[in-house]
Length: 340
Ligand SMILES: NC(=O)c1ccc[n+]([C@@H]2O[C@H](COP(=O)([O-])OP(=O)(O)OC[C@H]3O[C@@H](n4cnc5c(N)ncnc54)[C@H](O)[C@@H]3O)[C@@H](O)[C@H]2O)c1
Ligand SMILES: [Zn+2]
Image 1 (cartoon, rainbow, N blue to C red):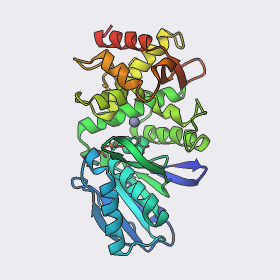
Image 2: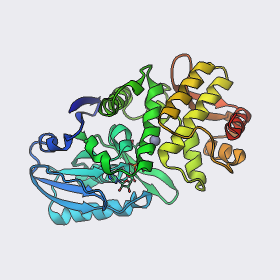
Image 3: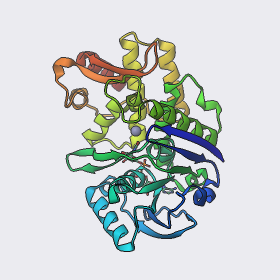
Image 4: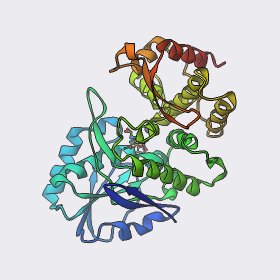
């Protein structure tokens, strides 16, 4: 088992990565906790033993379960069970479980410890690490949340054996983004090492910019590499794409756009395509995409006059770039649609 230390300014904690890592759960549960509220979903049949008195609380599945209603239900059930501020929550699942249970933990008694047991690849390399927690509103995804760092994260790669292939691919889309945040070739690593490497990269970003300072163009916002188009594709709602698949298309688009504006050369674009191809991820827009709709969704909340804000690769690495001309964005999307 590989241990990656995350040194966020608000809390330092270990991420345990490897086959069988779950056996160490009892060692990373906060000392002093007498009870553990385990939060998971039906269909995730992973036995966890926190080594203290525990009970299991079920969450629904999908984005609909990431709601304020779920938070209210969890907090109510924890209270009836007798969970105190000195105890701990253990979230066992993918991003839906860790985001929702993490946020409920952040607000229950103004904050109770949480340990994340990530059971999806996306959770292991991204959602469970870094302390962003939250839920959706009818008005949009992740609109309500809190920064609440976990006390530990367990990434038992044995859990991936039961993960549906589509979910595995989705995690690989998120994994692909880390290839471009550093110069390292992660493809040469075996899975456990690669998951650990991703955790380390995210940890380093968070150590430097825990709460995503809007003025820090090379900070936490770079973790949104590939995400502006991905969110537009997801918001449009009529594409059959998992989050990581949308991110993969977003990365392919971001590379093409960066080349178009002269920030990177074609070798670097090819490097993006090579990594996405190695993960068998999509690099073109889905059939029937509307450039006008996607540009409109990408520029939402921003005055069109200022241009678009995107995370782009460049000579100094990946960074936030403002004021991008929407016509260049549209031309890049058209190129991506035609698959040229
Ligand atoms: N907080 C963050 O920093 C962050 C980062 C990225 C994504 N997210 C959030 O994460 C969510 C997506 O997470 P996800 O992709 O893990 O999806 P998910 O949590 O919905 O999990 C996908 C499906 O796989 C099932 N599942 C989970 N583990 C399994 C296992 N081991 N075996 C079989 N089935 C299993 C789940 O029950 C679910 O049906 C989104 O809501 C997104 O906003 C958060
Ligand atoms: Zn993402």
